[in-house]
Image (cartoon, rainbow, N blue to C red):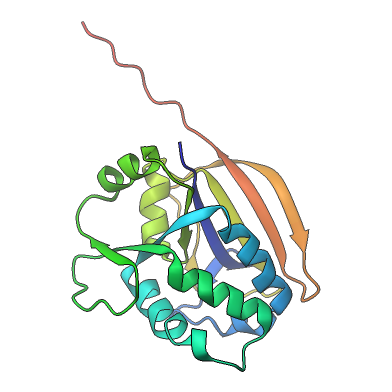
Length: 199
């Protein structure tokens, strides 16, 4: 079965963005070294999942970067992968699609993702998309968390982990970057499903 991997930039105090979805702290510490590591991650992925807000931001930015000669080599390689991979966006309101390889899906997330994970192919990755990630974690569908921990604390913002989500995590890898960011890779221990008894 394909793995469903969440890749998320987070602060030391567990926020994935500021209270108004601010991401300026993320760009402060991002580096070409991290772009290269992200390209390596994508080599094992053939499908990207997004919520609507993250999708629109990513589509606006990356769809124009293949011809941007100001980018460093690692960023160009990442831009190429982002534009070539299949993309699925979950939204009930999105009407305009302007990014190559995009499919829009409406409806229940779990019903759509379960057969996708069982189909042939490489792993599936979710970027950002906090609301989607929350739904996937509640449905017990996430296999791995790749948390890019930035050396900053916001004290307020959009938390990655909500009170209703309880996870058992096992650290399987870690990488320290020169910018001070630490990539922590966690395997999520699956919850045991309750047994069905026929009386």
